[in-house]
Amino acid sequence: MADVIWHALIGDEEHGPMSQAQVLAYLRGGTLTGDDLVWRPGFEGWLPLREIQEFWRPPARNQRPTYEPAHQPAVNHDPASPSLPLQVAELVHQQGEKWSLWGAAIAGLVLSAATLAIGALTSERESYSLASYTHTPAADSIVYIFGYLSFAPLLFVLIAAIRNGVRGSKLLPPRANAAKRALIFLAVVISVVAALKMYGEMYFSRQEAISGAARVDIAKSFVSGCVRSQGNMATNLGATEAEIMGYCDCLAIALGSLTYKQIGMSNAMDYIKRAIEPAVPACRPKR
Image 1 (cartoon, rainbow, N blue to C red):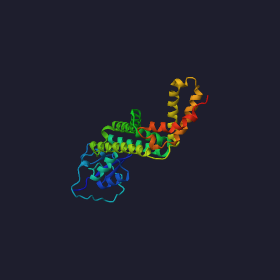
Image 2 (image 1 turned 90 degrees about the horizontal axis):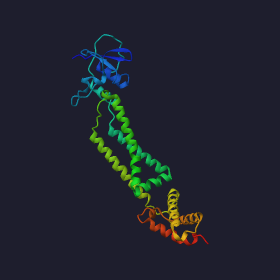
Image 3 (image 1 turned 45 degrees about the vertical axis):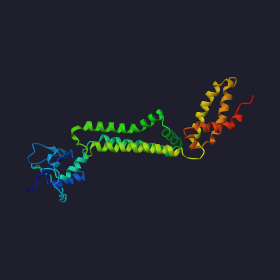
Image 4 (image 1 turned 180 degrees about the horizontal axis):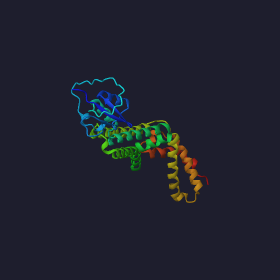
């Protein structure tokens, strides 16, 4: 059987006649795309390459494609044109495939997790905050982590949905099924959560004394609570705000003897009380 002859519109020019192998060569070289129009005998009109029905036939088992060397086709307006070779299917499929919503969610989640990791590695304050959120998760810390991790996936899914909706019927279904990508997304979620929990445990398992952002944050929290409690105590009704603040600031200095492991334990308040107890007499205002 003689080769079917193709004609293609490239820009405003009609090119042909071409063999199937020549069309394939132009596709692989980028001269033709799935949106370019082609015609062969038997067609009522010009059709985009991606819509050629013969294109989607699976190759015979163990069949190895053979290619002719690409030749520059001559311009010819003789009406005679083809059915796409099987290898073209993969190229057109790649160019016009829908974006998987699960795939977009996976990409967004990986980006969010990578951003968290980079922040923790480059900023001492970010490192301490992330460890605090993940070590003893409260309602507000869970909301923060969930919101941070879910922003990029939701944004990527929205972009993919809009892109698919705009291009509509011109796009082909994604090759990987949704269930497989959903499982991958779930696996990534579990991995990220486990990694965050492990990070928090490792951060607060160190035996060295707290320093940097951790010490500043703990001291500020302690002073805030100390001022409130001292101001409400009957014995301090005659003390000025400046005296109470100075007393609490003095006690906060003693917190530098605490270790990361101590402040990360469930009974951290016991260690804080023990740390400040020796400093109480020296810090109390003299009258």
